[in-house]
Image (cartoon, rainbow, N blue to C red; front, side, top):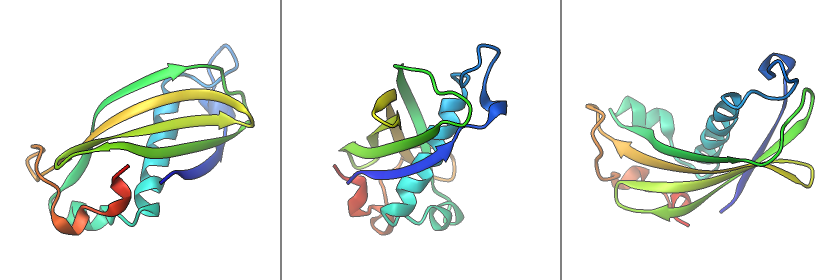
Length: 130
């Protein structure tokens, strides 16, 4: 399943070179992952209330092109790997036909102590699987 969301680049997200600062792409990807979880019907707030979390364990980003102020960006997210405790989501940021960012995000399901744990049945939704 591929989910999509969009956002517009704000001027304050840009650096002295006039393009989006590399660290701000992490915020864009975070926003898109939350939308991904919503789209696959993963109840994030219920999981947190029950003492669980979904932590980012690793992010690999290839920066292809720069985003500029007022660009409309499309962020695509899709799972490519899922185990009993963790998984990997591929995320891409597009401006029209231009691929700007290609990222792989490894996540882990954790308990209230922040320790990796098997995903309970109620949160092991089909949309997390490739």
